[in-house]
Length: 412
Image 1: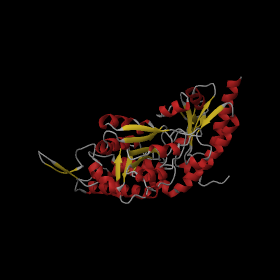
Image 2: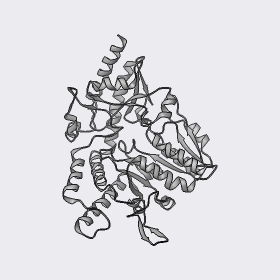
Image 3: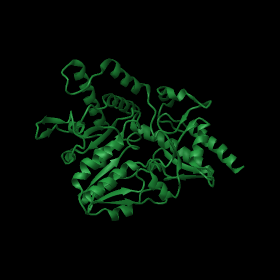
Image 4: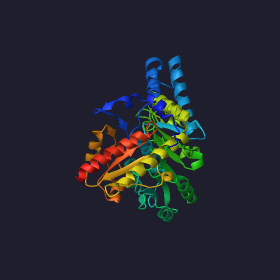
């Protein structure tokens, strides 16, 4: 089996992997919920707080100037990571959920009117459904949904039928957080642009795991979170194509976003600062930039190939449990990420998660903030194993070995 990463060296950067859980070596297969953090990211945050800390932008003293430079250099680094045209297109938020809410209130509320259509898919995370539900009640726009095929892919034929002149916004996941399905967002972008609409991409699961080039994808907006890509919690990114920056209204106002204020009026700063009112998560931005450096050193193509390799192995191993375990999502790793949702027949997914925990294996259970998708699959929940750069073939074997014990005990 070809290995694209030096896993042994990578794992040294994650001390938590040395822990014992219930007497067993930790097998962390929950990165789709939140990734582990390497020493380098933790140290970057620690050093900033201990010896570099100051608030940014408005101070003339050395520490403030230095912190401001670190903050804006981080913005440039993240812009290059996704191949944005410039750093002014990068807005720092609290996470993907915050970014999508900002788009709903700052863009959707401005452009939508009665009779307009918002197009989503049945596989969206709640963070990409609930804001649009609320905005639809405020604007009179209607929400429509694209179904999936039995294989777990988006129904592109239905999508072609439903995109028309009334469709102003398509807001869609790039990678399903349950099925692992990778969506051809470039194809959808071309279609929605033909009718004068825009495409918003939820990149929470894709940006950490595969090369992302926003120019090549021809999308309009991209949202992603730091904590799913080795970075700290509480920091996210909203990328807005330069041509659309002036169409976006800041949903939050306050210090740091305003050029001038009188008793009767105010003027905004230029983007991106007009969208970052208040003291931002400075340490989080620095930590995220360090996480990006870490991933760039590995190479995002290598990250993707490593996950394809492990996902392919895991799917083949789980295929041995036909009749005992149901696995959801596409069978081809070319169109799915390292996310594998499954159920053991006759067992509640939470019970399976608890049993796997007794083997030291950390997975996620429940509906994964994707209730409509689980309703579509006619299941009450699922067990989700998710793979990242620090996982190994041996850990996948431990998962399937544990599942073998669980299924054998169930049969008896």
